[in-house]
Image (cartoon, rainbow, N blue to C red; front, side):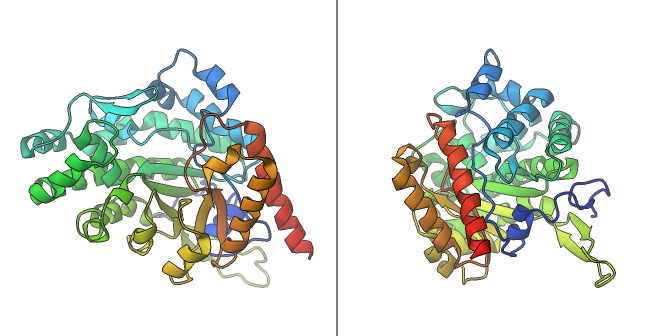
Length: 380
């Protein structure tokens, strides 16, 4: 399916940005940088805006969600915005009883533990999201109108991470109930994963159609799985979730039509990121992702080796070092940039999200360091 002609990719507004080029495997002169969880809790302007508003209510307020998305772009001059929302938003909109409890995270009214529980859950029709996601589409459109040539990244939770919250009833350290259901009742598990794939895939598609220039699938809890379990019980559903955006394409017009009049059809780039998934990188790429996000546990050059040296990478500054003395952080960031040169292309990011206590000034300085390193490399 072709994106609308006014979409930022189709119109050419974001198609030649450093982020999109890097996601396509082309190394730009300057390494693009953005931060997971940059939109939100580390910024004082975010905390001021959120006073008196619950998290999910903020996500479903188009004006507020847009403003929060834009705040770090204005402040830090990052090379992309990441849409402010939460992976459980589509669960709420489809009718699941879920709240985000401050200091804890998503908490479900009822855990999904049995075949009967799964049957009740999957009776909720994901197609209601076609209308229910209107606030999300409005927020994305508001945001991209303001961002101009800076691309917006849409995101969604991978089916396993959503399923883990549903089965556990909330956050968990080992996801024992989810892994038990996976093996104790594979048929019920397959039904649950197919449903979460449909729900989260529609969420991701709505953001891209509304104007996001890339899509990122977060599998926060996939690191709890063995490789065999991931491949057998999880990867097919993740591939199904991504399929909701894999068919979205646009025509890229050549910069010099006189010299090269050929248009190129491209897909919307898809990033797949997981926590503690160093042993799963190749399998996470194989579901249909263009780019693999790497957490802070393995160096980028090793991740590149495991992926065969052909996959664009994103990552992987250790968030803990954001509170370290600047010379320590600076040396670490430069090392990440150097290791990232082994890959076809690299987008600098964190190996997980911005901690809430992070000094925003450090993030701004880090962006400046990455951009300056790119300028120095280009002039060398």
